[in-house]
Image 1 (cartoon, rainbow, N blue to C red):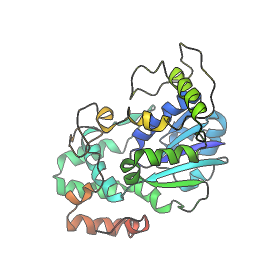
Image 2 (image 1 turned 135 degrees about the vertical axis):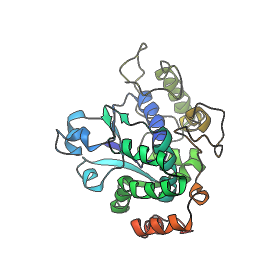
Image 3 (image 1 turned 180 degrees about the vertical axis):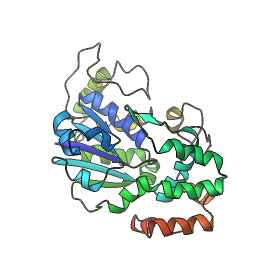
Image 4 (image 1 turned 45 degrees about the vertical axis):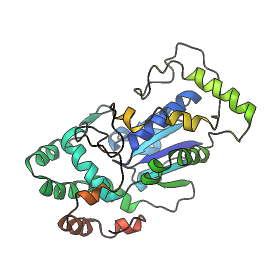
Length: 290
């Protein structure tokens, strides 16, 4: 069955893709990252692209419900974030650091938006970002949060209780063994061997076929894999710094790493503009209005 991760923009999706890519590498799974409808334009639908490429695990960014519905049978994890934090994180990222090209696709809208943000002060720029964020938040408005195959999680919980929530994710995907001491030891050794050619962590996503060592075929991960791998994907290592969450680098893709930062930037004017544009989205997603 297809495994799907739907990450929302500025909701720890890059961090999650690194973790999932390493797990896929250990298991010999084929992966595919989809960030734009341009990737399936010639196929006609997202589902047709998946049928053609046949990945075991697909990572979707800002998935639209109508595109998601074209997928074959799947198990899915959808991670959301307080949309006000998405706006604030997006403001700094889009102004300073976010790439304009990835996977051969140019984000055309970001180029003039970045120029505009650099011309405006923070107050006016945040208003501009509220409107621009419709690229991501509108899909969160129309997403069906009651789909039986989807494990719905909040980024705030995921980064606050990493081991428990990532264990839940891998269990939902059916990728962890049941508790068993002997199997745990054997699979831990197999995972270590299968990842031996990953020179550094965090590391560039690299094809699982480019290997210098023969693989040990395994279909499940030991339960101890989760806490061990999370030790390598910390905020400091992902940001290539010695910073802890809460310590700011406005030029880094990993700027601050804590939830609730919108309170430091949203004025009454911003809050009003956000509500006029997105209605009661905050409350519908289960976040406090203030």
